[in-house]
Image (cartoon, rainbow, N blue to C red; front, side, top):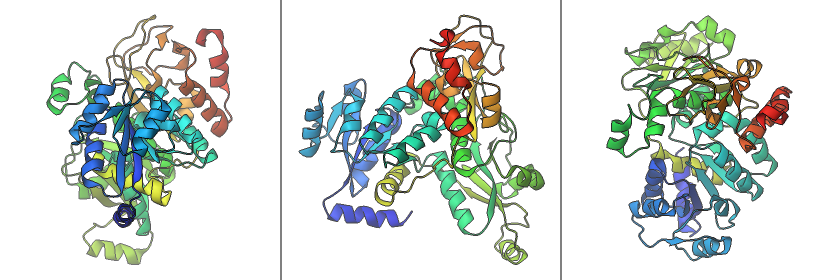
Length: 443
């Protein structure tokens, strides 16, 4: 959004920058910090949280700010921000409560921890921008309810695939076309990848092997496309979307992969393919007006009925600052859910699993995630991939089988489980998850 640069420049000239705090100190937090500190006028990075404060200090140092203080109390944190000193903390709730912070950016990838801090931030009228697709896809709709209750904005971020797709969707809609497919492009799809197979790539780029695995095994793209589905009302044709179908031809001809009558009947779908060159996300849209179809043909958009629009890159942290500014200055959410969940992400066994196994987290060795329509997810009581960690299997689950709530004993007293139960009751009038959480086997 070009208007954002002028608004940020005005804030810079007024000496009133947007005060940003980052929750998390990983690879993306590092890049975002460098972007805010060095190339974003009108915005100031005032605090960073990490359970290991030295990592937060390193994030600041990466951005060229060596003189960092550590705060363990609310007063110390707020005083440091007020006096203009970069500050780190090992207590994320200090960021959520601080009146010296305008917006919190969650980069953690954690659903349970993120839920606690985000709800606290809302209670303190603080906006939240998510670089955490996992929480957005798992409990984003109900978190949106809480944000609105407190007059706060909850938003996905510009730059990552959901934000890039939603900006494209809004632009194409503004042209007068009707989007039918919102698509993502991967370079690799293998559901059985794990942190061991991805260790070399992770080390090369300084990333977390588990996060890299979630890219390779399809979990991450499932979370991302669920966010887009929830913001557009689009569905998946079937569980798993394309499951890595390859399309390496010209993106201008990618509409040949879809049946327009089926797309119309479904109201639009989210999907992904592997290998399409020079493309990161795409939108296939149609126009009902023959006169406009004539112009689209003249402008070398093809003969329809599905006209391809695409973006060749996603720049993640480079664009996140635009999303932050949209939220704080324009009260505009990048990918706001239309209501309840439309698509969710279920957990699938990455290998044969035995009764008594305790599941590790997404991006690890035991499960991968697949996008599935919410009615199927709810009716079959599928376990969400975003909440697999710590679940103990009550029975064996075969490789590539979906894991259900009935297959597991949940870790006790998780806020995210209660929020999912509330999400089903609030939007679908379904109470089975609430009943399950109150049963002895789930206690």
